[in-house]
Amino acid sequence: MLRVVCPATTSSGTAALPMLARVPEASTKKQIDVVGAVIVRDGLVLSAQRGRGSLAGRWEFPGGKIESGETARAALEREILEELECEIQVGDEVTSTTHEYDFGVVTLTTFLCTLISGTPKLTEHTDIVWLPAGELAGLDWAPADLPAVEIICDVLG
Image (tube, rainbow, N blue to C red):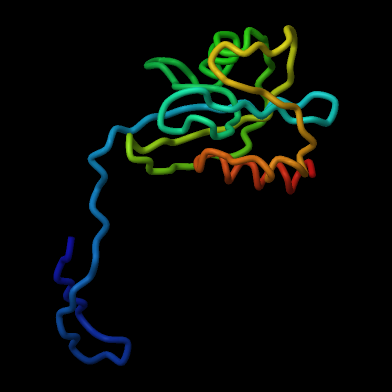
């Protein structure tokens, strides 16, 4: 959308002429708040390959949607139990990023996590791998996960 902006004066103090400025339009897409687990075990990071949907085949930190009335940490514990049949301890937040996809605007908050019990099982993903942080960049990541990947590579790599 274009909007007429009328600054009162220029930097030199003279009256300014009206100008057109591009104002970003508010997205009408669905807002989706999700969490992701950066599970670290023996110096390796768990990565999961999506099995279906518009991001099928892309890699992600496992997790899912935050339900109404649920905290991000509680959502992550629930999602990992449902998706991987494991229990985790949720630690520090890595980052929170927002990415606009064709299906909606996703805000992903990732947390460092420790595996407490269980061995990750494939229930929703097509593959999981444990990799050194320095090798994470070699996977084809979902765009919303990329900022967390960069941080993890810098911190743990």
